[in-house]
Image (tube, rainbow, N blue to C red; front, top):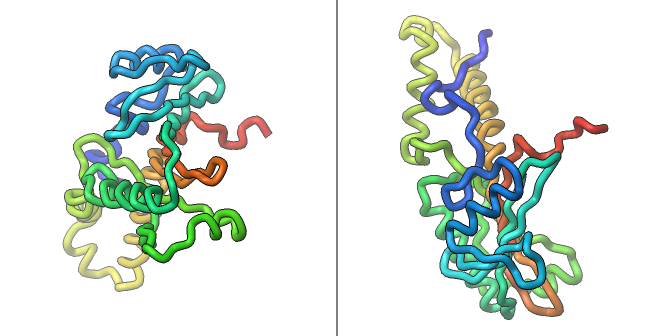
Length: 220
């Protein structure tokens, strides 16, 4: 059975993760200049670390590279907070990402933390990681239009007669192929965040990853 090719409207060209509209790509020096143009300033402790405000919160911005190319932007809260406040912050970020049409969740699970969650105990004793992951959609696509575009791609590859003669099993196989291909493509634009701890206080670490530039075992 022929493989279903994804819509050219969705994946006409390789598109990388963006942070504040800036592609997570290129050299570290160029990225620093672009972030400074956005209002970030070098840290007094390390000129490669930038300080500024992101999404209403004061943050430190770190730039990760692989073979000279930017592969990750890490954004960390400057101010550490208590357990109640970090639960509120984590849940607020989850809500914001869920409501943002530029992202879809990378998981079917519910990331929201309940009021009774003992974050300190779970992290310290059970080594629990509190994190939420999302995929950044390509430009010109949002999560509301995605199903329509995928359906159009599906129908463009087969005539009505071909679809009519397919068994339910064959159609399910095709949709599974679509899902796998879309997931593989979208996973290259991963944006995720986690609760980090420092001496009994907590902060959010957020990561904008360009998986095209990250190490993928090629040096093994």
